[in-house]
Amino acid sequence: DSYWNTLCLPFSIDNTGGTPLEGAIIKELDVTTSSLTDGLLTLNFKDATGIVAGKPYIVKWTLTEADFTVTTDAEWETLASNVNNGTEEYSGKLVRLGADINVSTMVGTSEHPFQGTFDGDGHTLTLSLSDTENQGTAPFRYISDATIMNVKTTGTVTGNLHCAGLVGFAKGGTNIIKNCNVAASVICSGGDHSHCGGIVGH
Image 1: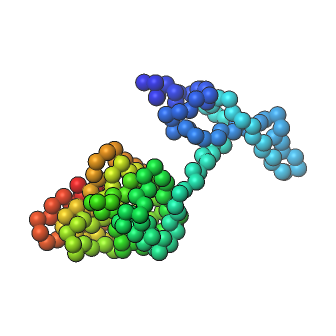
Image 2: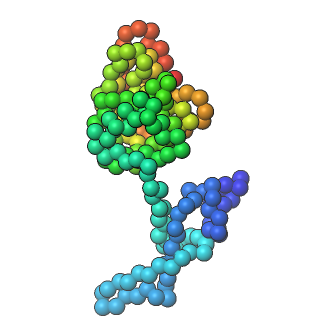
């Protein structure tokens, strides 16, 4: 109830915590300084103190600086290598996808799962993944206490155990998957087809 009450118009923006506007900078149209002169429209905005229906606003979220940004296939390989070798599992860190890339290497092992936040920023991973070791098949093969968000996947994933279009095995802790679009073909072949799924295998 408190969530919906916060969103009812008009409402104060002194505290936007827990709402879709959390962390946003909100400006409202300043009618006293905006003008239309000789066909030139000038719109000025000022800090908003509240939100009411029928008034124009500009809403901007400041992008959190990433600890590691992936913009190429090679940088994805670096991410996978860091996690899989136990060099860096990104616990408490943000990894951001900065471009559409092709993925043929999986991130995370049973011993070294990905433990950070991965923000796809609306970009697409085109997958070409297969498992020959019966360890799982997914772009994120193992995660633990991780967040995977805002990413799209397409392409093909072929495997047996822990096979999925996004996360193979979500291990302990709190794992969050949100605002993701999984359109990859998941093909479970061989063995007992254990723990296969579209988004998460196990």
